[in-house]
Length: 393
Image 1: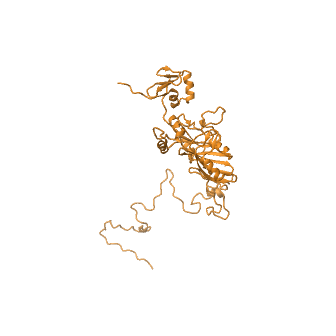
Image 2: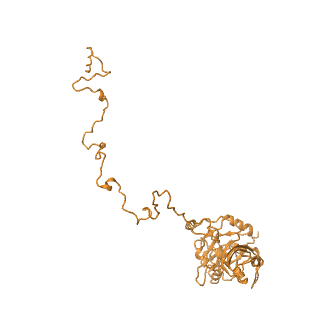
Image 3: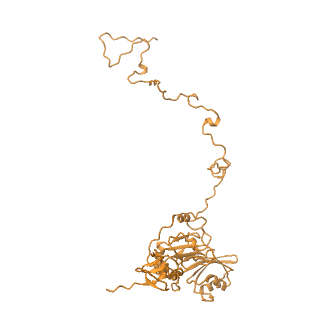
């Protein structure tokens, strides 16, 4: 029985997919003799291995391929879109430090350009979205110096001649004019180096502000600059439908709890048009001073409230009448009322109740010296029944 032929890939690509290092750094590991394949040290570049069946080790530790991760970062201005910068400038590596896997950016954004930047550890995903044949749309909002007329807009739509060739036709929408400046929304399907800024210089409309709002249909809505999130399941399905990647769609892992709270409480979040977006915290409405809640003619502000400001608090309110004006009445008996009931002291005889069980009612008690009347249950004697004394008057 013949063994089925397995697909082979380059060794440095296997190391990169496992999250060991980038492809260039993986080549340095191979050249240093730190990589073994099935127990044999490999130093030759371009060596191909079977990713599923070959045992690949780095410094004696076997590597395992990571699960694919797909991230969208809202890159701010003043950050380079590389994992390392020789000049020491801030990079996206610091912004993606909380991602549980080693990811790299899909494409690049200029140092002074903000907006959507995808990151992943799936090389096939990145290559598919960056290939010129895919014509992946990228939408930008830009502000240029000067007032563009319809002829200038058509020139950008039909293509601008650059040093490396003419640009492809683009979708252009005029947003507004602000004095001698113009705001545009531009969608291109190619990724030449600094293409939009070079288009502005070629047509004498210098680009002053540039932000990417969408990449392959993934937007940065409700995500403040400097934050990231995993691509949703619906976004991954749509990417697979349009561009064939990722090969396998899986549910994204949960976001770290700290990032969830930070995103939920992000304040002053606006879109590229200066409008507040969903998820941003709006300032609380101001409290009206003439509100009937305050009562009285002179309204009281929040900062004047003793509950809100400890500096304006006066002496504490009296807790009892005695604290308010000296020794007040300590009980109802002192104030002139009836004495409250109290428990008898130990050893003292408890007072009898008003009516003990079996005792006659007060209105039936005989007067001193009088004969107590017989009860109905008591049998009569043989003698005559005594007569009742008559009342005088």
